[in-house]
Length: 416
Image (cartoon, rainbow, N blue to C red; front, side):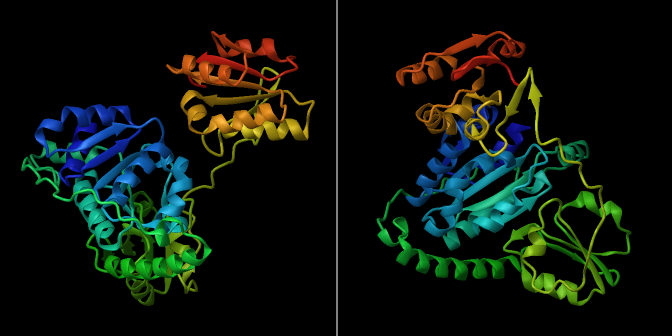
């Protein structure tokens, strides 16, 4: 599967590719001989991958960052500023949907263009369009792509070829790196920020006009009752006679197309999952009806207990459990708290959080789940003068540390 995805990506001749997916990175290495020259790296975390690719784009290179949809949420710091700062090359952030996590709200809140494809056969085409928008409007473009292989299986079984997957060798992109210093963009002090905000709003409206004629948006008029959606799976809840507007350009949505559809309807149902991103971009909502296409998911318990410990996990981002645990201990000094994080999360955002814990004298237990970086982390925290760490063979051993009265770090191989 990764080889097929990589070939569709390379058909668009990106010059620089950064990813956190080791399988994707190794596949790109295997394909280097058959495609124009490109450079790629497997980055240590998502923030590094996004920022390194972004650096290439601001120097004029055609770049790509490949993440999971869940992984994009770990890059919010640079993502939320990238639309204002802009780029001079082409920059596509391809987010592969491996879980239920959607990136639709990030496009809306970061003011970045966002496209969705549920058909991997069209991946090359939508990436090509993403680069067109990115080049023309000097902005990063987000693309969410489903990971399913059903369409490919059907095509191969019937002797068909996915769009954009031909054996024709793509041409090498000729653009050269050139960094142009512009303090009005890079510094973005309040005075410049106001001007950048005005320019960004104009850019968004121009992109909206481009999206009005994008062929990936499908319109079918059948009745006076209509559905606006970006997800095919929801259509089974409505009859064959229902009118449909299927959108792949989620932000900014093509308002003329949407409003023209709604004008022809008596009632409209918007089906877009957990985040009402399409609905939030609409002005007139008088025809919108509530849709009950699926049961409301039950929320998990807001707390977890393990071997007598109150458990804090990375629910707010990489290594956020460390700050959560520190906050709980300052609020309730007598509570036994176990913070659980992972080695890559610790190296991503855990270093400053752990330093803050030591500086302010918290005394909870931190368990770092490891694979191959245990020695590196031990060397780092030993350099700070912290030596109260232990390696345990299984998670159950944390019970031994329930009554420890000082900050303790445990290393355990595996995932929980």
